[in-house]
Length: 527
Image (cartoon, rainbow, N blue to C red; front, side, top):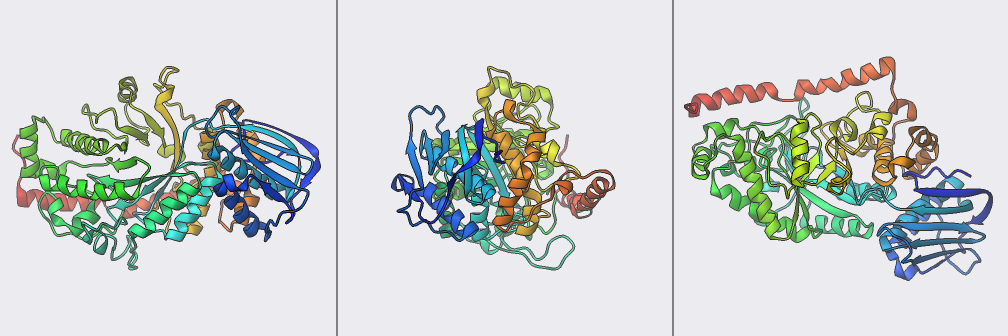
């Protein structure tokens, strides 16, 4: 039997004769030591087969630890006559062994042939990002995304909580952030209001559930750009104290946080203090990308900051902000991640990990940052942005992207933490669309994250999709068929053209008009 497991294990051999059939009488040995793994298995059996394990039979699933396994997240799985044996170096390894077993049981409809599996991840960081700033997803929906991550052996949940179009993190110190900033009157050309935010209790429940699935949670509070929702709630955060409303359209906005005012830093640090109380994994994403400097060029506060700090141009304010916020978080023992972006010659402190999305960035800049020792997470927009249509990022392009970007040598491989799939939600308003975007591409990215390069093959991956789809169907999630995920000819062209409609609601013209009004009112900076 060929088990269609995704992500593919590093080593698997299987026979052709059924030696194990799971019934309600199966006994789990060692269950008390691995409650998370056992809970995951029981939930799967209940939802997929309406089966509750009662024990006292001859079939056994034995769970345990082994020092002989090298990787902290590695495991072995053995299927023999009436027995399944799963060993891990740690509880996480046992948990991942259970995720593999779930796929085997689904494919074999509870009957398994003999098998021997030895497995471990290619990368320590295997991430998934969910954007809840554009469209809000309920707490229950987030639970589902976490379960999806666990099945794919992903272990870092990057939670994009703030955007121009919605602030979703409730703050005791600054309640208007959600009272005003979580609501928008409509979205692009429709007339439907949209709102939603997470209470602190919601977020703590989500963190606890993620931990039960061996997933760390990385909140993103995106600043100093992408902050119109915060400015709508607290106008003093902007350069000119302008009264604004939460953004209703997509695209980069010229209104960003004022870096010249000390009150801006007091405010953001206060928010981050609350963030660190809830999110206890010691990692925070500060965004930091797509920050136009048009407002700073006219702002007296920002110009004074430049003079006081000896900065030569406005783009240096961007680096100043990121370095200062990064240092504040590091002083609290937090690891800091930001999106890689063009900051000209003024790169942020190299202790800030770069999430690499901008594949058009100058290769010399990237090589320079690698030489400085900056660490990287790979999330290329042209391969791992799962909101993009299949006509732009098809399944094969997604699967075959090589995470080892130019400039990473054998000596600097340790700087590459791993990879992350990103689901932006400008055009993903619900779980149905999310499922279509995610599957099967999330399976492809999970294989780049878990399976070593020499064990990967797109042809082999394609042959395992039938079994993969069986599992996705069983958990009632939408997906793209293999044909939809690999569009050709007219279908591919139509997919691209349909995507280009986004330009009609990207807001670029509004930026130009508003900027002219601001320049007229506040004057231009004299050269």
